[in-house]
Structures are given as structure tokens and as C-alpha cells.
Length: 287
Ligand code: GDP
Image: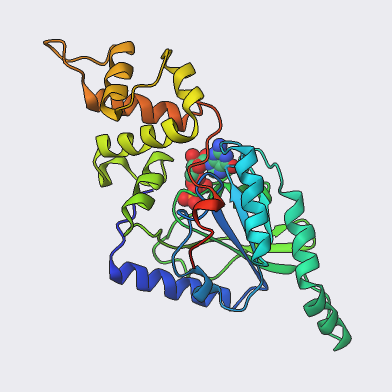
């Protein structure tokens, strides 16, 4: 999805989400398990306000399991329940209803005490583009259609999608923008494929990715690209991979764009295994 986020669009998105939040009991905040902080909206706490929330670490099938567990503890320490899920295959989804019931028990008990007829829990899925919102809604609703889109002339009343008997979702998710003012966040979003490569310089994204892999997953790099040892300089690493994979231009020069495309494609296709691009320890001392 390509949304160009301008201040006007951000304000509109925020307004839309704020309206939807009024209709629901609980928010499911969808983030990318590989970059749980960089794939969040910077104003999310303010926007959700006092509604209960569950953080869903999606695409957990692509993330480093060990780090995902650290993230779950990290959120727990902040009193935010978090679950690792894979919206594509449905792994982890059963926990969502169960946990929602626990978090809303008091509210629903109070409603019952007042004689209000029991109803399903109402939820809204919120997240930045490409984090898997449609996939999750379709999976939970056990349906196979993607976005309905805006149809001119059709009133866009909110529709509820049933998830079993105990939960219902608004059928259109809340879409918010990522925190892309921060260059590092931009590189992480680009590396995982959340934003188009064209937004940042392709070779810069690859330099970020290679540097990260060299520091955190050196063995994976060595194995994938058959490197006896990792060169000190990132440029040399770039060169070696380009040479090994035949990404050359006329005259025997390395084609850095071609090499970049190859490396990023392989990272995103999990050819270097399951990777996480940020860890809670990097955020421990931040607000
Ligand atoms: P949205 O923009 O938030 O609605 O994101 P989509 O639902 O369109 O998903 C974006 C891409 O991520 C699609 O190619 C999905 O197939 C893929 N995707 C979504 N969830 C998962 C997941 O849990 N695991 C994996 N591997 N891919 C996923």
C-alpha cells in the first residue's frame, strides 16, 4: 500500500480512528514483531487513551523467537498484554478472545449487574500500513476477501465482523502512520518491507541492514553468502556479496543497486532465517 502521509492526511486518519474507538471495548494494536517499536504510531497511547489494549506482535513467523519473547516481557512490564501471532496462518489467534475476556471481565460484570443484556466484545484493529491488518481481519472472520475499499454512493456505515460468538470487530481497521521522521526507524521499516524502497535511498537501506546483520547475526550473513570471514568495512561486505552473486556492471564494477535489491529481497523472504531488527534493551533507557 502506498499512502503519502501529509499533515492533513495524518489529522484525518487520527480523527477517523478516534471516532471508531468510541464504538469499541478494546483495541488490538497490531505491530510488526521484527520491529515492534518502529512499527507503532508515535501518538498511539494518546489516541487509544483509556481503552484497554492488546499489542499483537504480528509476522512472528518472520521474527527471531528469542527476541519476540523479550518483547512480550517488555510490554508486560508496562502493563500492556502482548501476544505473538501469525495472521497468515492463524497461529496465536485463539489467545486474542480469551485475553480480551479477561481484560474486560470487570466491565462486562458491571453491565450484567445493571441488567444489561450480554453482548459480544467489540474490538478495533489498529496499525500502520502493511502490518497485516486486513490479513488478520480476514483470518479472524474466516473470510477470504481483502479490502472492500470505498464505493461511491454507498453509505459507509460501520460494519461488524463476527469472530465466533464472543467477539466482533469493526470491518475496517484503524490506519495510522509510522514514526518515519526518525531516519533509523525509516531504515527498519524499509528493510522489513513496510514502506517502499523508493522512499529512502536503496543503498542506504542496504548499508543499514548489512551493518545490523554484521553486529547481530554475523553467522547468518557468513552462511548465506558463503563468506569465510566478515570484512571490517561495510563497503567491502557489499563488494563481496555483489561479486559472489554476480551483480556486476560492464567493466567489472559492482552493481550496488542490483546487489542491494538482492540482499533486501533475501532478507524479506527469510533467506537469512528469522530476524528481529530491534530489541527491548535498545529502548530500556528511553521514555
Ligand atoms: P495491512 O495494510 O495492514 O492491511 O496489511 P496486509 O494485511 O495487506 O498485509 C501486508 C502483507 O503482509 C501481505 O503480503 C500479507 O500477506 C503479509 N502478512 C500479514 N500478516 C502476516 C504474518 O503474520 N506473517 C507473514 N509472513 N506475512 C504476513
